Image (cartoon, rainbow, N blue to C red; front, side, top):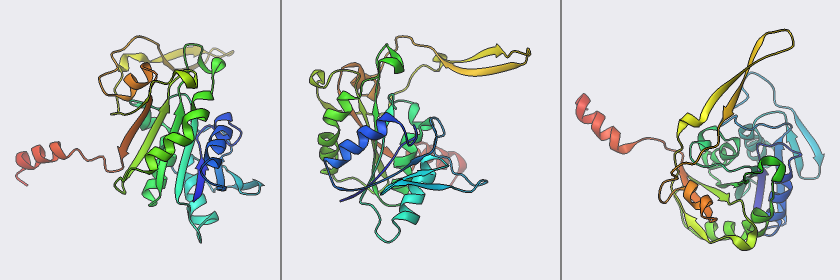
Length: 254
């Protein structure tokens, strides 16, 4: 099995090292194509107005001056065009990608692009606890990653489905199981704009996220992580709301 690995945290990210270890438990035919720099939050963006620079770091390891989507395209359509991968793995992201995170996440985008290109694709993310990035531990993803991927690959899914896996912020032995989940939803009151002034008195801004207790919702990815379970969420490329299409068809007479 040929595996293409990417991420959104960049070519030097520790999560990429973890994902390579996970992938090598599944295959010895691995290629890594990741962004030169951190691309967190770029979602499923393409570089259309700038050229893509491809840098070979060593055998089967490349950095692209672009987004995770660019990386997957370069991997599949350029580097491996004559022998494409059987699986795309994106991650392991530093921090969870659940609820509305999936709309912003470059990690999810890497798996999305792989799915669009007709390749089975999985996004992986490691949640962190109250200590934040400084207290980040990859042990849960590293210990359970390969086994979880094997379980997922044994399940037959439609061609337009990608899989979003999130590992809880706990020790590997504390994991309470693996569950299929739905995408949750947070309270967007958590999102704020932090206004500041630079040394010359000019305003600048940071997007800020508050930490509050929320109702995670039964059966959601948020609930799974809270309960120390590995969350496995199938996501569809086709975002059409079929129920609403029927409503619109009736209302518009179509």
